[in-house]
Image 1 (cartoon, rainbow, N blue to C red):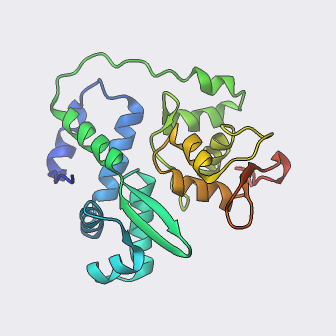
Image 2: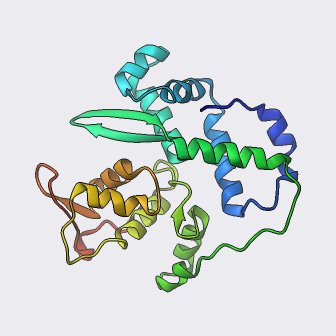
Length: 228
């Protein structure tokens, strides 16, 4: 599933990238390449392409500390190359097949002839009625209504919270959801449903019944502001 690419050649040919790839996808590939520009992350992704593995087990196999492994995995998850599954207090990661396939497709497009770039439909962003600056953030991280990259929390907290706020608009405030239903809603826009569901709960956008049986949208006044 994993492919190796010569980073130097990619950089040299970056200017001639196929115009079929949108600006959002070019940004996505750029972030993926940055995330993979580390030997440990490459090793982790190769291991996770074979099976789902807990953080502690990964640390033992790679020979680095758990906090360092968690940092690398967080970066890989931000660019959509791995997914997270929680089981109690343990975190299990595996390679995101769709994310890796997207990386392969975007990397392969470098060698393709250029054509006119199709316009992305972002009319749904304007329909939200948000300030223009917030709309620009959505345009940078989405394409045709799908989330193409999760903003890094440690460097772009405002953007991260803004994306969670957008995800929360996908839920009906007048109904309860099962965990499976929450995952189904999130998968409409991104494959890492488990990780984003946990983020929505951790940051107060969704409330969860003790034991995780039911979920519901938090009242707007109780949600953390992206500007706070």
